Length: 318
Ligand SMILES: Cc1cc2nc3c(=O)[nH]c(=O)nc-3n(C[C@H](O)[C@H](O)[C@H](O)COP(=O)(O)OP(=O)(O)OC[C@H]3O[C@@H](n4cnc5c(N)ncnc54)[C@H](O)[C@@H]3O)c2cc1C
Image 1 (cartoon, rainbow, N blue to C red):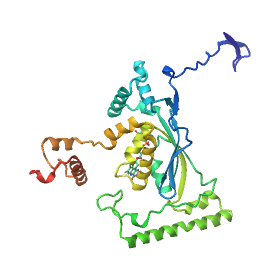
Image 2: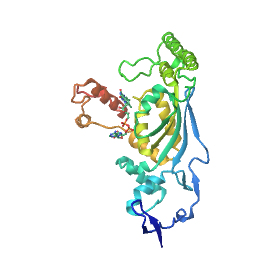
Image 3: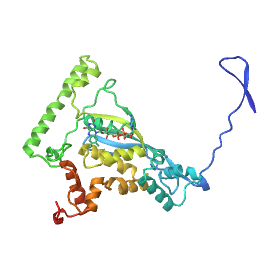
Image 4: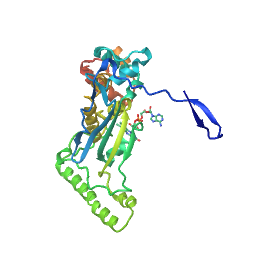
């Protein structure tokens, strides 16, 4: 069948083939499809006093009954063999193999979209993960809501003496109270912000005096491969506690939807350990120290030895 169409350059009709009809093909074996979010509009976890992370969509959203969204990873990986999903045990083995061997692109076939509210100082760390698509609340077009992050008195942390990225130990209560008073003074700037807005100062300028403890919101969409990268960096003990809380909540939200992937991620990434060449040499030669005079590297090796259950005190060599 051919239709007459006109090109831009000529009024003479050109004969072209019409597009083939769309074939609507039912799932293999007539399987019933189910919603990975169970029909919910959002799966939400509250984080701190004013924050939240909510899963609002997933791809695939519909999967054959009895399967999880992990199936999209398997489907992509098996495309080269011309085979679809096999038995669940084989699918699990394949996903674990892909993750172990960093065959990453099949994990990009799964995507998640989140609605998040977090303090600006956390958003600044989060936004560094460039592979996500982000749409943020605009302080130019709208008035910033009156919500600020403040830890409880008991959870104000002291600066770590060993780690520049932040400590875990609480500071004495008197200093903690001084810190909270300082936050209160910063929060009080919100009244100035409102007053200057009302006096006609542009919102895009009026907001510039607000503290980074103020909350912002965004939609954040990312594929599973890059989400795992985000989780691996931000669930790590070196990440700031506040963003770790969001990362852990994100992991809890996606775990029921891609359980096989998250299990493999914990086994091969999150709770695994990488050894450097110097560390492997020390292990092979039974040395407690690595051949480096870098103090931080030695300390990292000691932490790994402790995690591996190697007792440094019984090692006779320096
Ligand atoms: C504990 C911790 C401390 C940190 N401290 C600091 C700090 O002091 N200062 C600071 O500035 N940052 C800091 N960061 C941020 C860090 O340097 C990274 O920017 C952030 O973790 C994002 O990582 P990423 O680039 O791997 O992620 P993504 O941006 O999501 O990128 C994922 C991967 O995609 C690829 N990619 C993405 N964009 C590009 C591109 N344009 N070109 C080429 N490849 C690309 C890369 O392979 C990249 O690794 C810190 C992060 C952590 C976890």
